[in-house]
Length: 379
Ligand SMILES: Cc1cc2nc3c(=O)[nH]c(=O)nc-3n(C[C@H](O)[C@H](O)[C@H](O)COP(=O)(O)OP(=O)(O)OC[C@H]3O[C@@H](n4cnc5c(N)ncnc54)[C@H](O)[C@@H]3O)c2cc1C
Image (tube, rainbow, N blue to C red):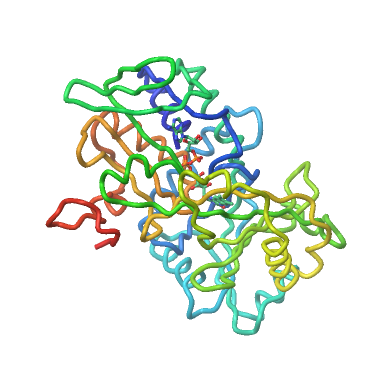
């Protein structure tokens, strides 16, 4: 989110300084793992769809200038029971926003998507525009193009503290204090350092991703022949995965359900390698739903979700400081939006408002009217 904000601000001619506590990209936060699913028929809520339409336009714009592929529309297949939320919610968003889609009854899934094996109770929805974005590449391209437009980006530079007053903002680093007119904070798993003062607590969780070599016919799982997929294995949560990306040998799978909660001072623990039982659980899902896909384990790693109480993002002006804009709590589904979040953060920091419909993501939804502080429940 930070690199995209730098890109949009620099492109508009503003003087920009971006800070990250680590390298760009890195594998100690939420963005590593080579692929992130992108889709428009959003089962989570139809209100996200206008943001997704713009996110796609901006990924395509970034792609035109990029040195490596950033986005690939492989199509995406959503599978689950009609009474649960993934297929039904996706269908609702697709119809409400007139998105290209194909509803699939059970025999149609079996006929048209022969790589999958689903129970008779499952239905499906195929979205031709679905696919994946490459997260590390997206960040590098945003940061690189921001720098080319004049932004200064400092890596291995933690922000130790910040202050805002009516004249401007200050950020303290080990090298000294930086002064600016506006501050954008998008600190991923470290966002609690900002939000706790407002009475909101985000839950940081450990998430596992793994790559398996198919037992036979790897070409069957290439991006030309095999879609990105999401299966509602544990309603309203599920598992999702990707084709074998160019240059790789394995199919990636991950679970989409908040994992084990980790206190902020133990983040290193969350990033310890996956356990055998975590990997077995992923292998079992592949073996059950995508026959012959779960051969040798090639690679695995852990990554962080930063969950809000209602699993929707927090995006907007800091309620107590007009010169500070915040973006966090992406709850395991934020990366696909990074391109448009960057544009929105640039709008908010420079105009104080945005044309994008983000009211439903305002932090105020958690505030208890009486105290003005967070109540942990969305109203
Ligand atoms: C396993 C896994 C799978 C996922 N799959 C998907 C998917 O398929 N589709 C999807 O859309 N999303 C997905 N997500 C979610 C998505 O990756 C995140 O929502 C997104 O990366 C969050 O971006 P961010 O900028 O908030 O956090 P990050 O990318 O972690 O960036 C925050 C940055 O802030 C820096 N920072 C923090 N504190 C400081 C400080 N004090 N000073 C300086 N720098 C600081 C950090 O070093 C970090 O680089 C997945 C996440 C995981 C973990």
